[in-house]
Length: 126
Length: 154
Image (cartoon, rainbow over all chains, first blue to last red):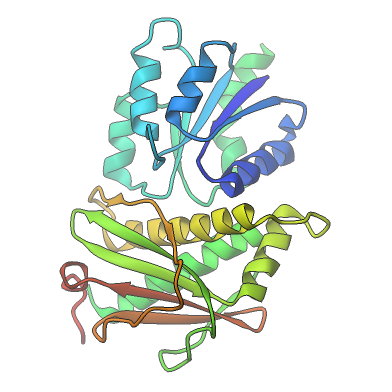
């Protein structure tokens, strides 16, 4: 499985990677980007199974990255998980309408991450 | 919403964030507790739907302990990683706090900024919350008249 983690904080990226390891995705290939623009520059070269992005980032934020991905025909099927510290029901609804696979509030826990990714992982197994 | 509710929401936000991220227990220290001496601190602006500022301050040894819990005890933590950690903690705590006081309204936060100077003077109207973590002190300060108007003193 190839997963891109997009966050301007090295701490947040490491925390997400740790959680992915705990839920059994320690053999996944993790590609990291420090903001949405860097992710877009790299994404074209990658064949990804999942994109995990923070919302508040410099240069290009997570919402803009989500819109970009969902508006690009060759990327629109890529599941995008948004992890946000500024999440609330109104924002979550908007992000889901824009095509996010799921929206999680910070701090994430391995249990929540597993529950969220379960349908995707089952689909991968099938 | 009254001040007591803000206190409860902030205490929960700090506890949930530190327990989930660093497996550390947090204890409220009461309003008269002192801010950490010579703290490392970060600032985060609330941009919408109202305006305010949050600061997170803690002693350097506490930041190092949190870092060791997150990055691993055998990892040499760089200054950049420490800075990222402080910013991430503030972002997470404030996000949870704002989600608690504005559960049905979208809000927008700025990007955390590292305090480059010594601990600056605090607006006398600011709300201060103090906590104890592993015998170290940690403080959160909320200021800005537009945001503080949302909190009615009882």
